[in-house]
Image 1 (cartoon, rainbow, N blue to C red):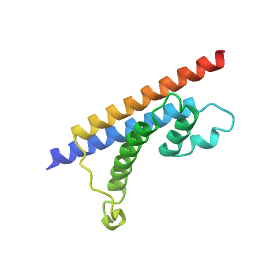
Image 2 (image 1 turned 180 degrees about the horizontal axis):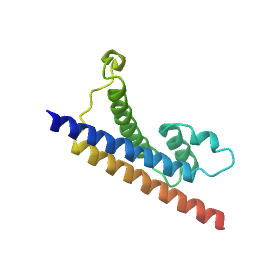
Image 3 (image 1 turned 30 degrees about the vertical axis):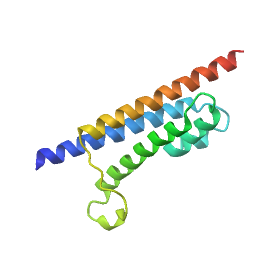
Image 4 (image 1 turned 60 degrees about the vertical axis):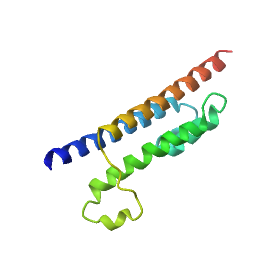
Length: 130
């Protein structure tokens, strides 16, 4: 049982860390005047801003799908840790599996988003250089 708990916690921590790294990357790229408020915004709001700014380069539907997947699992894991005593708070939140497969999926999705952001950033730099 302990081994199972450790594996679940490890997978959840990988997901949380990967999403935190992604949000940090997004904050670094959000360098326009007025972007300070976005630094405090959540993952979804940041992703939507990039989808608007770089609509020619980003696949908004794929970006949103990845962000939703990551956000739901990160939040579920965090609340599972925080609200372990009060399970009723979760209500309709699915009880996701946190295992090696979920951790791998999170890393793949973060990588896909990072690649999209790289393309958008390169496009922005090319446009600024013209």
